[in-house]
Structures are given as C-alpha cells and as structure tokens.
Image (cartoon, rainbow, N blue to C red; front, side):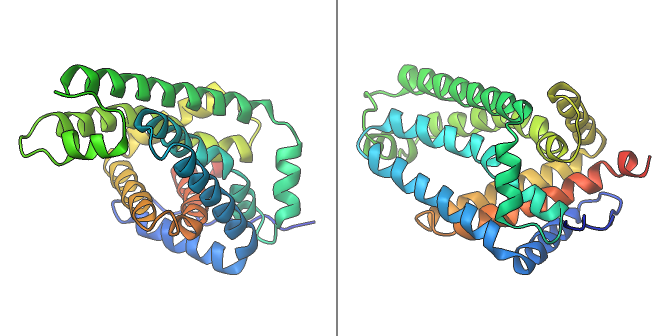
Length: 249
C-alpha cells in the first residue's frame, strides 16, 4: 500500500510555473527510477524515429509531431508516482494493465490532432515553398534559413494556433483521468475551465513547456531523459493547483 501525496495547493499566479517545476524536481529526486525509465524509453523511441525517417522530411515531421503530442499520454504513469509518493514501476505497470479506455480514447484524439497538424503544415509548405520539400535539408534551406520573412514565420504561428487548443484540452484532463473517474469530456471541459480562469499563468506554463522540450530536442534528445519526467511530475502539481476548488469541495 502506498500513501497518497498530501494535499498542498496554492493560488495560481504567473510564478506558479516555477513552483510546479520545483515540486516536480523534488518528486523526481525522491523517486527517480520510474521517471528515468520513462525518459530513457521515450528518448530511445525518438532516436528510432530520427533514424527511420532521417532522409524523408514529411515522414520525419509526421512522426515527431505524433511523438510530441502523444508523449504526454505515454508519461501518464508518472502522475501516479506523484500522486502516491512511494509508487514505483509496479504501480505504473498496474495503471497501464488496467486497460483504461479513457486514456486510449484520449490518445487516439491526440493522434488525430497530430495528423491534422501534419496535413495542414504540408498544405501550407507545399503551396508556399518555391521548391519541393523532400528532405530535412530542403526544409532548412528553403523554409528556415531564407532571408525573407514569410513562410517560416507563418508556419510557426500556425503551429502555435493549432497547439493552443491541444494544450488547453490536456493540461488538466490527463492527470484528472488518472486521479478520478471523470469521463474524457468532463476532464477536457475542466481543463478548458482552468485555462479560461488563469490565462496568464497558463500561457506562461505553455511557454515554459515549449522551451524545455525545445532544449531537450536541441541536445540530440538526451535532455528529454530528465525533462520528460520533470514535466510529467510538474504537470501533476499544476493540475492540483488548478483544480484546488474540486479537491477542497
């Protein structure tokens, strides 16, 4: 039997992101094995994707878009580790063996969102780029490194606009699905309510997540070994603060 983590919530503010990261880091240091195993496995999977699609830009873009969107689902076991302070890999495996259809359904919905982004991105770049984009080097040369302001900037803005509703739908919903018996729709609705109630802190949290994931990508994915569990644990504490009214009710 493991003891659930004691309630510890505070009002959400622009500084809350640093509190969540600090609490997430404390969780990782206290119980590192489950988090580092998740980080190693997901990083190894990322390397496999890089190797398999190294010369095919659209396959690489699709694979990594799916990886970044579905990775939070694959790390949901770490919410259990933060929820139950002494939980280990056994409890994580038990969570996945439970066959929770809500997590499967949510994962499929996120996969559809990733597919939508890849198709939209492909349409934009195909219509706008002066030359066909076939390989990653083509994307760097003809989209990222061009002197004129245009396609790359629009591509980034479009990605942010499409990522925003995905973030708003998941920031509370995923840990809530682990913590409660709420339906997918109830969890998503609660997630949107939390974001609407705290727009400034949520924008800050989204930027922090994006920056840390970007750092992890720029380290040849090695940084993700630690950053994936850190963000998963921190996301659990973000969920607790954002739903303090429900926890106290």
